[in-house]
Length: 321
Ligand code: GLU
Image 1 (tube, rainbow, N blue to C red):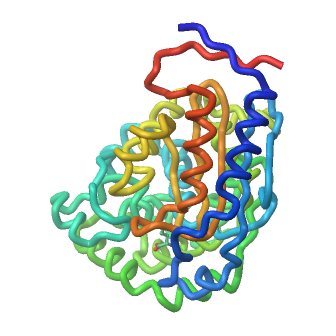
Image 2 (cartoon, rainbow, N blue to C red; image 1 turned 120 degrees about the vertical axis):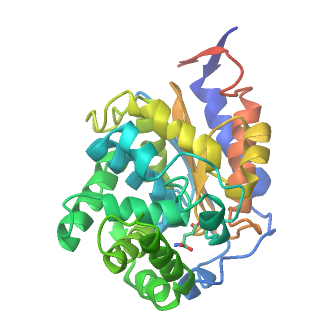
Image 3 (cartoon, helix red, strand yellow; image 1 turned 60 degrees about the vertical axis):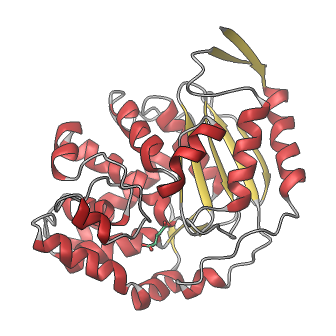
């Protein structure tokens, strides 16, 4: 079916979602990372980036929050850029675990395999693969430059979050060394873990994530800077990874009810990508028991449903003025 939606319909869906959920106080800030426990739980922002570069935003869309696991998407794209789609599949994998994001059990069940770059194990492996190998500063620069290109502007390290996370990441240390035991760390395990922890501690805004989602939706062409950040052929690859495991063990429920592939982080951010149409991001710190922002989920779901969209509908959608 051919379908048309107007920019004013999108604007009113965004504002409606904001008004509907602004006062919702379900969920709880992540407290296993002390910094995150203390972020103002009332913050709430929504942003959409259209493929012409126009941004539609509401609330705290320019607030810098901890990107956390949304950064797994960026670094997976970096691995695609540096190694190609086949090597990512071979060295990391593309399977959902169906288990929590930081599961050690999942590594054992996957027969030594990290399974996907969008859970902690695969993300630490991805950091180990980032080139230049054995050059911690060079790797960090590659990670930050890649995020900058995808988001159209630079992220900023939140020092306090980095310290907080480094002081308490015992589970992730176990994951790094277990992966090392299975020959799934392709550089020094401590450097790989530190890079992963540091990338999770980057401050980012909903606007920046919406631009990244739009870059993915736009076959690698950043609609704001007009830079071709990655090969068009990587868009379906990264979108399939996001669709498969973006909400960890709640991914099926999410896709079924929202119709849009999206990736979450325990900092309260969610980044969605609607191929050929737009990127969307929402941010609100309180999360559910799977680590996904309650209000960001409600808002994105409301907007996509209100516009009558689903990536599975087969509709050919155009956005009009
Ligand atoms: N840095 C967090 C961790 O490794 C990220 C988790 C998440 O956002 O899902 O525990």
